[in-house]
Image 1 (tube, chains in turn green, cyan):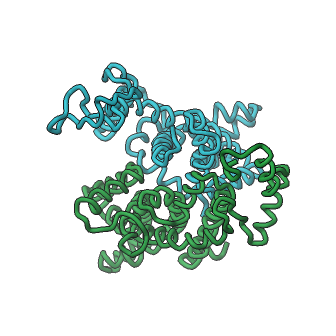
Image 2 (cartoon, each protein chain N blue to C red):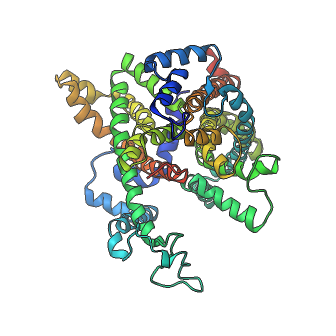
Image 3 (cartoon, rainbow over the protein chains, first blue to last red):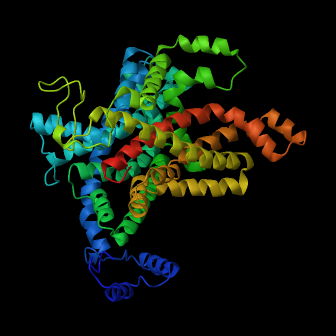
Length: 271
Length: 256
């Protein structure tokens, strides 16, 4: 309907339907779409009049860069906090680290993003508030997106560290008189990080989903904003392809995390 | 590593302080004793107070503000809140560009948010718990099927799918509740599966089987009470998630 125009006659609408194959049964349409996907053809966006693949590849680098930076931010904030919280368990430091993390989960993504814009963009004028042309444009979106993943990573790091620090080999290392810092960082962290790797892969998947909001707030032309725009202009081919692409990326990330775990923990390789 | 290991610790960790004492399956403790312990826990009291306050504000909205949240009044547009120079107590938080009272909109909006939070979580709870308990109890192929469905769900970008559904079907309260309910059940399934597996081989389940109890009876009266603690923890977290999720949908213009 949208393609034929608002004032199209019923004959014109019918002609458009036949031209684009919308008159065929749904199952047939789906089967031919699936067949094309297997051949690496994600379809043709009738709204943009361009192949879906071309548009997505154009937008993907922005989202990849955003998700990567967000992840770096989340890890840099969450892992030290988690280690600190575990090393100083049940003290004020622990509580403080936990509350920093919980705030990240409680604040809606878009609200936090708008706060950042208000503080760093409008009042202090340190950072550009929209677009994706330079590295500085990525700073605020990466913080907004990364902060949301912080609590989960931090809590898992803390739980992992506590478990590891209670184990026998840590007690042995301590008994041997190794300095505390070395015990925690070298012997403890490596083992505590194994579950964190898997969680990070999951979080990266959520970031792809969360990038819809953050990219919209900061007007960045990544695939998240592309998804939102496609919904607004009912670009079905694009939406279908985006759901598929994000799912595949998520699966690939999980697979990669499993491989990485095998590298980190020789015990897992046997199974 | 499966999703279970990743979600379980984070799911139980936050509320462990507050709920473990009161809802854990543990040995039977008299209710007054439990209440006494709970009352001594400041974190629990503050949290419960906040939740009660929000629920009360949502329920008592008409008594707290004289204004209609939907009524537009173009002669009273963009009134600043009361702490600014030309604000007035008639509109404590001011009015928006269409002259609607902000306080009324927040109070009545809380009703919708709570309704979505509880509604979506209730749907998710039924779907996720059924799948998780069945998978955990029977193992074998039901477990395989459930794990597969959970993985498919986890791979789907929830926000994008919710947006697409709401855009195609139209954004009414019912549609949003059902859409979210069908998207946020994964944690229920994962945690319930793990909890059921943990108690699967315990003696009282074998005893019930030996006594000839039907599967339904075992699941309802033996398994469910013992996984209830974890269920409540997941449910409280999911209500919060669902409310945030809906807020994001509304922000993008496709909510209620």
